[in-house]
Image 1: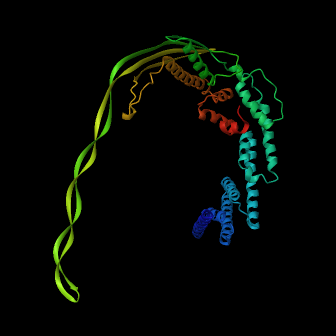
Image 2: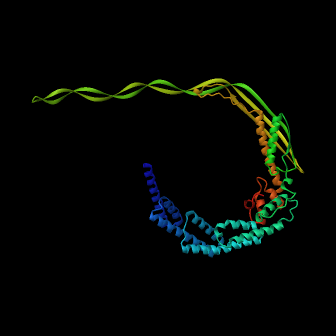
Image 3: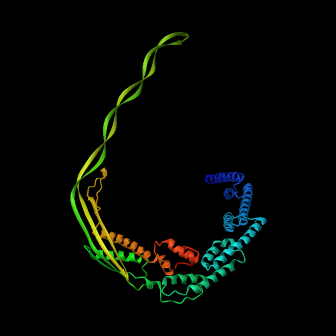
Length: 467
């Protein structure tokens, strides 16, 4: 019962706080901020008549202010911003469930219809420029604003038909351009999904390479190490733009070099410092009290006779006395012992050659590192000393680590080679190829897409799908 009562009190306090804030913001003319507070107050107490009235009035004021702003923008020939404002208003209406009165609803419908003409003309203009993808992007962007209008579906038909007509031109001259052909196929399928696409011999896979044949000849390595290097190089290639799982062409990677690991072990003297608390006796002055007698007199009456008689009285006196106390001092101790110091020096020098078709590439990888560990079996937890059993890295584990690093370097080289090869001359084939690179130059790719399709490459992909 107490919990329910507390919850009720908190709700009432919250409602009062939001209502107070809403009233203050309304008086200051900040109707949109006030609306947020009226909504919160209504959520806490929907039966409060003052909240109901405040919310309704606030909704009307916000809608009317936005509608006037939309009209003024339109009259100022800024139709584009007016459409954005209209879309923002509709978002606000959906968020807060704003109910429009007849006049406001009529006003909004009129502005929507007038602005539709501008929106439609922009879409038609893009289709006349043979940029149906940009037209589709705009069509979707403002779908929630205009989709209730009867003409809205016919605009989509115009966009799709433009795309279909454009595809008749795009399909010409695709020979020798498998990457661009893949893009055009996806592009045209977007506008005409029911059209059957004939299979073609030139595919992306025919221009790319399968898992490479890796040859590893590293002095100082064994078969297990060679296998790990082979795996690292293959995976790096498969993660690059050059690879395709269905490719028939292969490439060769030759890795040569040397790997050395020299481990030494020696006894070393170790000192472990710790602290102990040593008790000792000290004396401290303590204040005490005692009752001290003294002679005095009092006037007393007994059996009708009164007289002054001597009496003994007591007064409280303080004094200091030294008492023994136990205190502690911290002292440092050192525990000496003998441990093993294991050290290992690693050196790897790799030279790689990559050849696929006419393109050849050389790369190298060099690392020199040292590692040391102190090992002992001293187990004295009371002084914070635990056994240390972790030894230096095993040669095969470090070799695997170096294989991954070398593979990462190769991956960066492969990406840079792809960019150098295809991201300089903006032909259709090169641009689509260029975009395969994990870190492709966006300006190079997007400039071509914007010039030819009116959208960025990422926007194109979000519309038609991966190509």
